[in-house]
Length: 277
Image 1 (tube, rainbow, N blue to C red):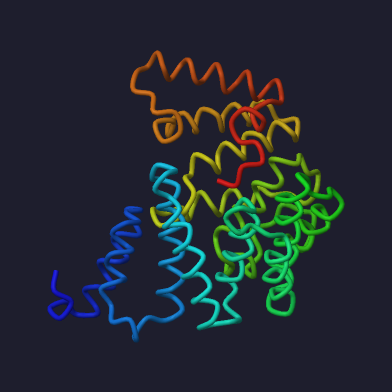
Image 2: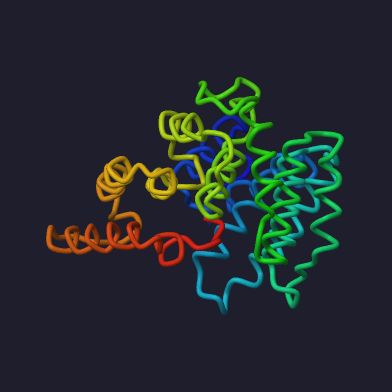
């Protein structure tokens, strides 16, 4: 396609369509059709994100260029907008998740976490726990429970507070994951689950099946086995996403496996672990 023949409005629509379909290679191609001197912090951020997601899809042998581009473009997004919360979050996650051979570094991750402190105290605290989990393999339960209470503004199961609805969706998903993985007994997270499921869309970087898996684990932690099994039934409705089954027999096999893992307390260990999905 000739860059000169594409209007900016049409190009932006194509980029959004590619994002919605999670066609990351196409996102990269389309953004690169923009004149280089017109790229802004959002464009750089999307290029960083698209390269990051694409690096997970290709063979490991071919992933390194995408990893390098991810780091480069997130860095450019930060240079263009040093107070951009989404970029700071992306950068601390990148430097927490990458192995040291590819540039992973606790000090680099903490640089971006600390930059969040005056901008968004809750994002700052979540970042501290993310880095702790990445480099120490754990999150302090007291810190997590205090964080949850601050998120919910109370320990009751009220609707999700408006201030959280305005945050990035992955913030809420990350909180849900922490509660499931670390069996937190902190503030009620039912509003988190309801909000994520009711507002889930194709542009989310996580599937609704993962929300429901976490909800099942949390229900089991809360001594609500029937509710946990109901969530498992809902997960199975989307099981093709996670398990690629195609027949009723395969579905029933996965149902037995999920229910047993849940009852044995091994669902996190066997299916989720501390993986940041």
